[in-house]
Image (cartoon, rainbow, N blue to C red; front, side, top):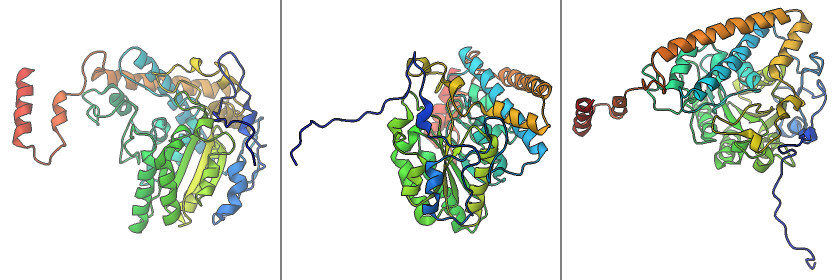
Length: 412
């Protein structure tokens, strides 16, 4: 056949730019309660509809619908709400602290609080999360000390990581929070390897990997999927599709004509696309995936559809590349407000409860911040001692490092 037109390179464009309204019809939503819930031992091919559709529990009126609606007691819901509010208030305070030059860098999880909170409440002690840099709710939902998190941000003398990590890159073995890597997608391979090791040892612990839509374009993502499929690793593979990487729309990572969950199907992994702004949905789907892993039924890839409400980081200005009102117009709404609406309809929460909880949490966060700042911040110059760079390198410090350390101490 004779070619009659020149070839063209297709470059995906976002569905809204500054000064416009985003057309969110590209999300391919479906009504709450419509998605079927398969058995734990479902075959990969029988999850195609789940990977291309969208599991939703809460409808627009705050009612739980369909087979995925979880049986959650009132105390768990209240605990979840408080964890989500704590995450949001913590983020607000730390963003302000960065603007006051008390730390060099910060990243909010505004709009994504339900995802980490729900999965943290589903997984057990001893399981291991391999997070990206927007999952502070994984720690907060487990009541990790806020003061310790802040000291890491300030890189002060009480920073358990001794100033060796970029702010927000927390680490805690006891809370199942693997050290965050600044190289995107590496945590996917690490999580699969950890899960494989757990299976080799005949352990009962599972792993959970976290990645954003942009990082699915990295080679480590596909490598992890291959190993997870081949060895049926007991791992939950979370993809948070919050629509934007640092300035590029999710379509540039491959989300234009299909879903990110569909990539799991292509790799032979049971996959689900779910509403990430609904706590009940995240809780139910995470619970299902965890049970699959614990019953030797292999990995589950979950695409959480959400929206990055704030900037990518304190180094980013989203008004340069997307509409300013996208967050208010996002069809899946605000996860905190949606959970509040459901709890009010259920009769276990009121506007007064909500405001009182916010006030109590604000007071607790401020108190933790004051204590953390008393140990020093970037603004005061009371940061972790430079001498700690000589520690934890060798089991026994060699002579040349001892000499360098001595010169450093003499110069101070």
